[in-house]
Amino acid sequence: MSKVTVTIPEDFILGAAASAWQTEGWSGKRAGQDSYLDLWYKQDRQVWHNGYGPARATEFYHRYREDIALMKQCGLTHYRTSINWSRFMLDYERGIVDETYAAYVDSVIDELLRQGVTPMLCLEHYELPAILMEKYQGWASKQVLEWFVTYAQAVFARYAHKVKRWFVFNEPIVVQTRVYLDAERYPYEQNTGTWMQWNHHKNLATAKVIACFRANGHDRDGGRIGTILNPEVTYPRSHAAHDVEAARLYDLFFNRVFLDPAVKGEYPAELLTLLEKHQVKWAYTDDELAIIRDNRVDELGINLYFPHRVKAPERTWHPDTPFHPAYYYEHFALPGRRMNPSRGWEIQPKIIYDMAQRMTQEYGNIPWFVAENGMGVENEARFKNSDGVIQDDYRIDFIAEHLYWTLKAREEGANCQGYMLWAFTDNVSPMNAFKNRYGLIEIDLEQERARRPKASAGWFRQLRDTRTLNLMLDDEDK
Image: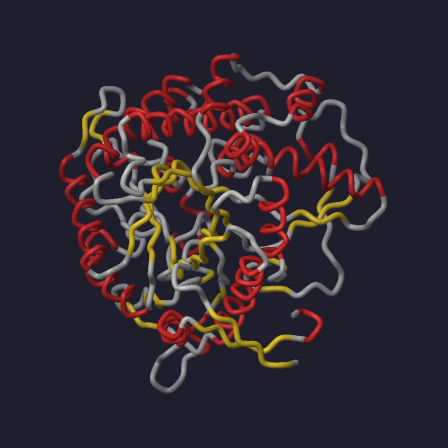
């Protein structure tokens, strides 16, 4: 082990992220403004840890001034959150804005700017209006796609003069994968065609929103628009051809299905061929593919938490089972891997460096940044000192190691613009609720959601102030 010191460039983002649905709570929400996550919570509250969910969340809706002051105290340069589509509109089909919620968003943006924290806003972070899910099957509907574009136009008209960094989706592959491929979430339907239809309509929506953004001149004066993806750095079990092929196909179905349209403007030809081979039914037109081709992102946010490892399948696929991409792979757990036991995720900080190489070599070195990275730990109260402060050295080490590989990639020429932590405060996650805590700031559920900085909050502020990262590394990792 030896000490390593890395200088952090002055223009490098040191921020944090959270979504509207995971922080705001339901206070002020009107009848009929449930999101998909609200609907799932109401249907299946028992699957959310200890029953906590979006109903109260962290109560950011009322406490945003307090929280933004804490952001400044922690040294955040940027804060990424979402506008809750389900709350922004009174009528999704007619495009009528809820002026009360819109005024709240105005106040949040103004307070961030006043405190010197740059806002970055996402248009959809799982906040599909519940009524559009129930009536139209959500993103399976082209009409829902058009209503989303109408919503985006209203948002840009109101806020684009104040906010310059915009993102269409956060992790657009997640909801339909959990619902329509794995049938793990409400409404629990295994339908690969619907999964691919959601994928396509989200890619098309991204392109259409980008076209509107630019057509209305919001790309002037520094305005930029992109999307936030979660491509998993996928490693084969071995160098054997069958394992390498399994990893390549996993990447094709789950990573390139969004990466390629966003950056290259097209689907991989092999993906379309395999979907046709397995008789996966979904609808698209040449005109839609042209819209995707002609409206590509300015930048990417990439969420990275853990490596994904696969191997060639060793089981026989049941002939009556609908096609699932897992036909081509099985998950693989690396023996002796370093783990976060609370979350059940492998820890491998070099995934950021490996993703940076991919962005450089395969995607034209497009501007990108780490949009989420963090460590969720259960029962953090056991790490409190005599003053009641959580001594989360494990989180400091986790951030430092991942930030090291981010900065190393940038030094070597990767067009990486920054690093953003998930999350600023502890907050609700799907099903896990408040079980695993990610924040620089503790949310105390026993004391009316009181906020308390953890040790990592002071460390992060020092990181920002000194623009210097110090850490201990094994010599082989440098």
